[in-house]
Length: 315
Image (cartoon, rainbow, N blue to C red; front, top):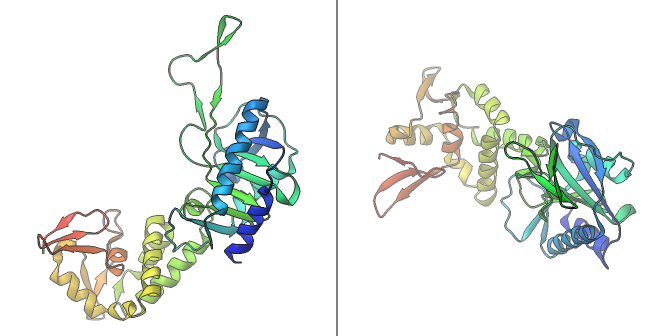
């Protein structure tokens, strides 16, 4: 799949505007167990929502479209595209949204997302709001009141909030989004990221002795931030094929022994020095950070830092 067919599908869907609007609230503890329910809006607000979606989609069509890759770090001028079937939880919800055959919302479990669909058939575009505070909130303090003919009545249950801000769009079997981590953190479709992390870790440690490698591999699979670090390493390997040649046991042991304040322990495997993976929460990121060369040196002050936190360490 390339980005251009997906861009064209989205552009075709909104060319000349779009008619009709379906509004849906998605309730549950997650998308995996969500129930899709509909609600209607007064005409003026419905027109505003349609305008907001068209504006957002037209803005997307002016950007560069890229097939989703978990190693990307996108800019504000880029859009990521994935086949909707590769995101099972969103695909299941999207199918219900497009069916249009759902009951009206009457409150219930927490709201995990809102969806607004414009157009019909293959050209229907669905805009999702999947994250951020204020989608719906329960009354926690004070009593919200609404006027009716001079009488203010308390509002009971959930308050539903609309904002012209969308996290993902679907159209013609594609999902569109601009935040690379959204697909893993909110949509729980992390297969590609896990495979990339596995392949990258195997590549960069091919010439490195690590005691506790199996535990390191499992930690990378289980931790989104460590998978992200491996995605960064994958980009390093792609941009600099010579980088992997620097990743040898001798080079890495020499580094950690020269800079002991980075706190990366050394052990022995079959009588030979090896890096030691420490699985504790405060130290589990050390070896991935080392593999990513995630350190800074200030020539002005001759100080060393960890790149992520810019926490100073001693030379």
